Amino acid sequence: MGEAYQIKDQEMPYFLTFQVVGWADIFTRKSYRDFILENLTYCRKEKGLYLYGYVIMTNHIHLVVQQKDGKLSDWVRDFKKFTSKKLLKMILENPQESRKEWLKMIFEYQAKFNTRVGDMQFWTHDNHAIELFRVDMIESRMTYIHENPVRAGIVEKEEDYLYSSARNYSGLKGLIEVDFW
Figure 1 (cartoon, rainbow, N blue to C red):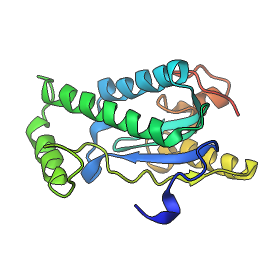
Figure 2 (spheres, rainbow, N blue to C red; figure 1 turned 30 degrees about the vertical axis):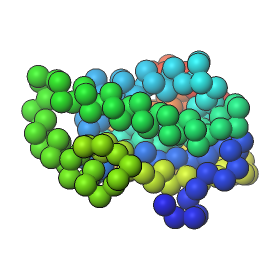
Figure 3 (cartoon, one colour; figure 1 turned 180 degrees about the vertical axis):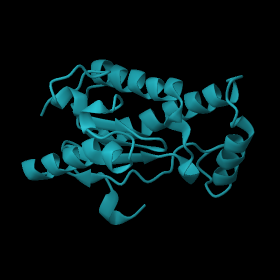
Figure 4 (cartoon, one colour; figure 1 turned 135 degrees about the vertical axis):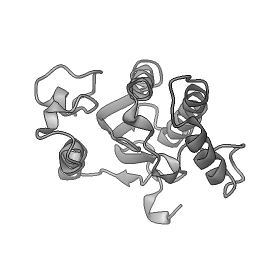
């Protein structure tokens, strides 16, 4: 992981990107997106996570987050470890998952290059962590994540994308609660 993208100040808000290995389009399935939302909600309520903004795209997630207890690196490690194991299980045990064998091949192939994982790897190890130490940086990253589905051609207006905090910030009901900064 590059020195520039490490979480250094554990108490600051950060922009993070969690990318699926091989850019595999996992989150085209509603059940997998909903699982991520359930876990973000749990982390807000039980793990001291401030969730300021998020977007779940087909193969990656962008977050603007901060950890109440100042242990953001621990939260990232735990979140990625837990969601990785559960998502792999969900995919491999899903009788409706038509891409099961292809995805398994990607996860197994990517794991060969990493001694820290088992037989399969779900998330890349880099989190592209960017410390947000000024208000304008937070605003810029929030705009970036909210416009992501528009740039991808999924929706015309950012608040129309259900799996994003853009709805919350537009005064609409989001799928999950966020912490307004």
